[in-house]
Length: 121
Image (tube, rainbow, N blue to C red; front, side, top):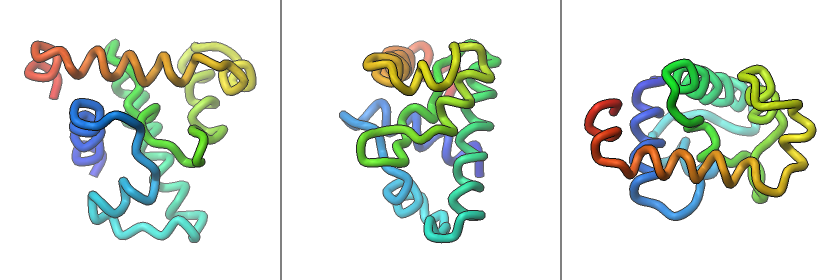
């Protein structure tokens, strides 16, 4: 499932203008998860964290930055993951006006590059 979601996020960053919401990702991928059930919502969050951790370890941008949990953007877990990966204290990252946009921009720049796309998809 992780690989399917990873590939979908790469498609999204190449084809779409904005991040995708949790409900839209679930619907588009037919994941069958119910966000009203905390365990299922947490499961999707853990999958996204695993994907971004693997991408980070390979020197690639954080694909989970493309999935928004709230209308305005990311929830705390994304920023806590970023802290764990060495980007800074999560509360500072969350308050930053530019951090999330920078992460999304890095994803777009990396995955719109045809060489990166063909090599790392």
